[in-house]
Length: 174
Image (tube, rainbow, N blue to C red; front, side):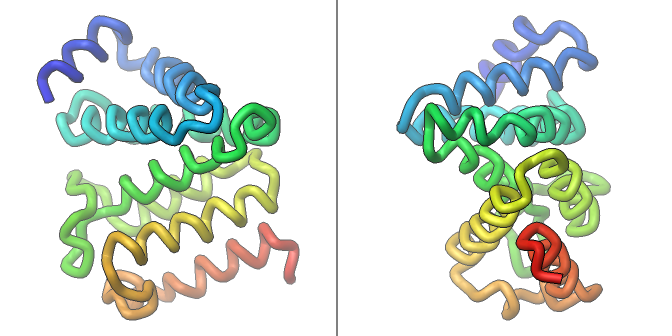
């Protein structure tokens, strides 16, 4: 969307300011009280800017990571503040043969998406990070209309085991 790209370019003048811009946007979105509308709009803006190639994924990852360490504070004002992370991560899931609705971007695949999740949740409360990953999985199942383990993209490269390992670590279930 050209209007979104122009608006973003007029606010964030340099690429190195993008992470700070997204951090401010995401924080404003979650501070809107109990409304999920702010979160949905912020996610939509971020995803549209990525699709339009106006921004890279890295600044969004950095913004999510910056907010991850403050989620418990943000949840005090909005119980669903952590949904920003899970909703955005779901929208950034890569396009594959079994997920044609996913994000198509050169070099963007399950492995780069997974690394982004791990980095984006670094600094979050472990139990909150657990909830975020589970919510991402639920959102992916809803979007695809199938159980995760039935999707080809999850059958490759021992991916389900990687998710379970991460969840065990977050849930302190070693």
